[in-house]
Image 1 (cartoon, rainbow, N blue to C red):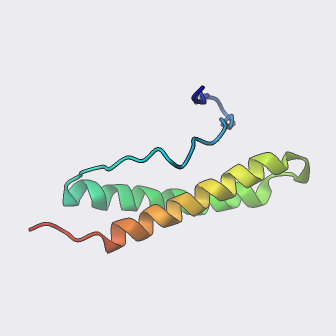
Image 2 (cartoon, one colour; image 1 turned 60 degrees about the horizontal axis):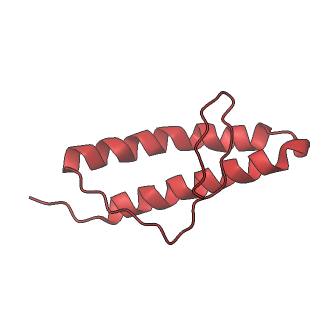
Image 3 (cartoon, rainbow, N blue to C red; image 1 turned 90 degrees about the vertical axis):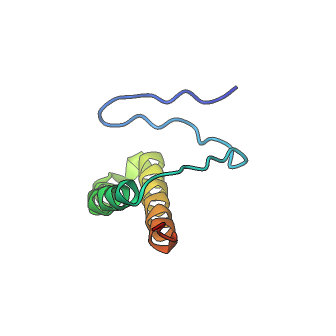
Length: 85
């Protein structure tokens, strides 16, 4: 059974999806640049939130760190992607 994303504030963490699922996303240079900028803007806030999370909320802290690592990987992929002319 696939996990159901839950929306809320603070965010409610859904179970991770199996890594076997993959998606390829095609975007313009402008879209890639915008996504990279959004991720770079989001990353410092995410790191601060993880650092501020109380010790009893270890699962939330772990999820925030996981999201931070994912954002970093996506930024790296966007930086290394060849741009089409």
